[in-house]
Image 1 (cartoon, rainbow, N blue to C red):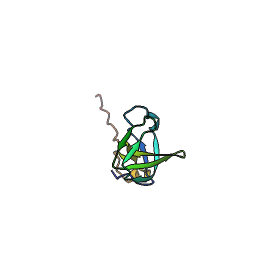
Image 2 (image 1 turned 120 degrees about the horizontal axis):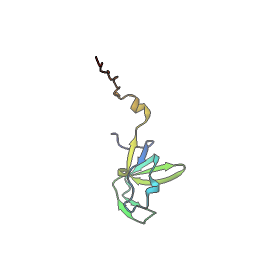
Image 3 (image 1 turned 30 degrees about the vertical axis):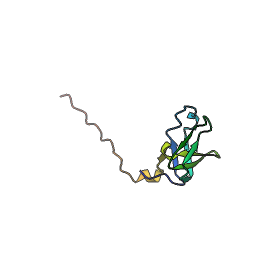
Image 4 (image 1 turned 90 degrees about the vertical axis):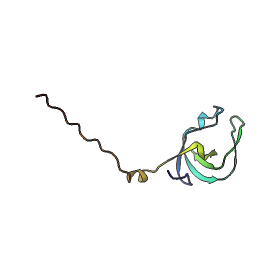
Length: 96
């Protein structure tokens, strides 16, 4: 899977272990990625150190998330090139 970059659509799949941040789960657009090393959770006040953060936006709200909390949602154009398995019709057995 490709690394997360500016312009990607991402889904938040993990949040702070405090349990107060479930409202952050959702799909966002990445504005930029940074090597900022600290992340402060406004909901619980917890500060953690991460190697990479992504500035994301949703409905005009911008926030930083650790990249490890995010999963890239591939664009449809990327998915169209992949082979799909077609279901073969099941042959009915004759009861003779």
